[in-house]
Amino acid sequence: MAEQDAEPVLGPIDLLVVEIPPSGPGPRGFAALLHLAERDLVRILDFEVLSKTTDGEISLITAEAEAMPELTRFAGSSSGLLDADDLREAGAFIAPGCKGVVVIYENEWIVSMEAVLRQEGARLVAAGRIPAADFEAALGQD
Image (tube, rainbow, N blue to C red; front, top):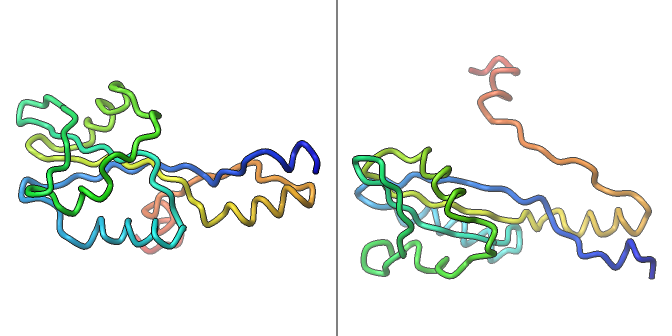
């Protein structure tokens, strides 16, 4: 087996910051994320819950079963990629008085294709995101 083939293959890694209103998350949004993970379409690498006070102070909190049962199934998902500065930066997107969730996930759906590409001597050399609003605007659907 060639050295190149022995390298582990990872799919593209993405980050999401989700703002949760004071009333809490609904039961379906994070269930959809869990469903994607169960189908091996994504792998949750980090899942952190933040709280932002009305005066803007950001802190890391634990998803408690009583207050946020939808989030407890992700507890403990931590790759060590996020540090305090990253969480403060993510918290800047969250409105005062709300909670937020920072999710880093791997797009596993592309891993098998990328492994075959490597076996054939090809390689994925770039990946990117186009915001939906930009795409819709380019199509004249804004």
